[in-house]
Length: 258
Length: 290
Image 1 (cartoon, rainbow over the protein chains, first blue to last red):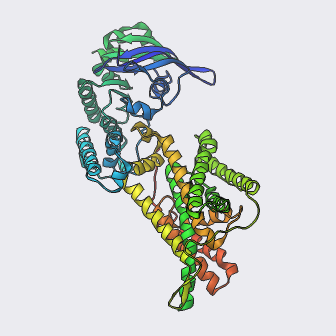
Image 2 (tube, rainbow over the protein chains, first blue to last red):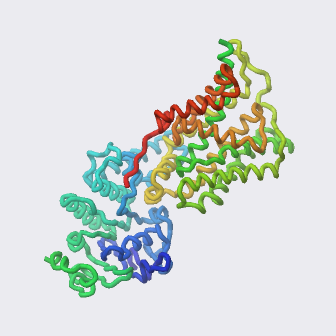
Image 3 (cartoon, chains in turn yellow, green):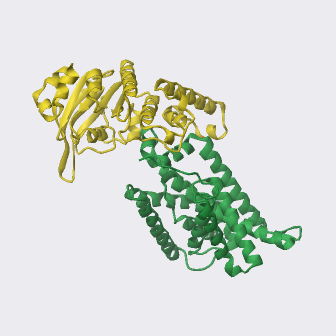
């Protein structure tokens, strides 16, 4: 049994099949990338897996339990965490506060203990803050901790979102274009961060346009075109697949190979 | 001097009622960005249900408790039946839904209760207290104390408890809140229950002074809304200060100018404040990155 199994997942919008009959699975510690041309259904697939959309067909199985269409907060409790291409950040909070929200489930205690500021409540708050600071250091944002999240650059916010997702100690982490809007140095850092997280046993599902990054760090690639899976396999295999080249990779494949 | 003090007393009493309505606005606004114009009906329900439960022979405290619980249930029903099915609609549509709900609740109350004006005995007798030549009712002290207690409770809830901060997180970004494991549906249910309960509590406190009827809600909602805007929508401190200020403004205008101008004077000053401070006295500027 795989950690995450996607079985015959499909959805259509207004009669248009956005995603149709997609199957694949993800093992612990594995980095699986979903690639495909714009409009291939990558983000739609992500939204179905993470409970933002309810799929019309198929199932999502997490640790042997069917979680199809389950709301994101329930998936969070079951160990699935994600980031968004267009960011979902608490703009009114500081960077540190944003990271602390990632500890919400671990910080939870009796409301009355919070109200009377009991030692247990203070201890949980301290642990959350220490954890959040450690994670900010890990993504290179420790110096921005007290700034308003709204004042950060797009690339920094991407890393903040990853830090918040990691705070939840997920079993599966879905990253939607984590390197978009980042410069070469930042991309490199994110690259290392993802590899490190995967090495610690977290399964990573990645949508990314930076082909070099995808080819370099993925264990496994799923290729979508017009909402259907047209190929799947190791990076080298996929980049040699004629159908993939025709649909999407074109000459970039050779570049990535070399 | 005693005249001024008298106006201040009555202003603070009325202001405390506005503050309670404004605090109710604050919670739902914080959770959902929606200004709930049915908030005044919660105050009406609190008073009316207490009246009828008391008339049916229940002791006053029990009648009041029932009124608060039933009104909280009405608040939850409003969320479940009217707001939640329209989720994803623009906030303006949701606000219009609450206006519709307020008309519905008023109409239903007219049928279920009646069209008469009602009251019940003050909690601690009707004898006024004399202070420096002015008088204040014991019931006024109940209203003021009630508003302060609700404010303190809410302030602690939103700043000290994880649940309270989860409500704020939900209002800031619902999807992000879901991502970190916050049950945003529960947050909404809780917010409506809490808002309705606070409104009903206000109704229970104020009815012995102002009396109640099925149609008192609308005026209260408008005044509470004005108070919340004046203080800064979404901020409990703003709701309290805005409510008290509005009450004082009205009482002083009524006392020194004419009671006919009291609404006008209050709204002119609110407009002036909002002209220079669009976020209200305690509002926080918000920006969105697109």
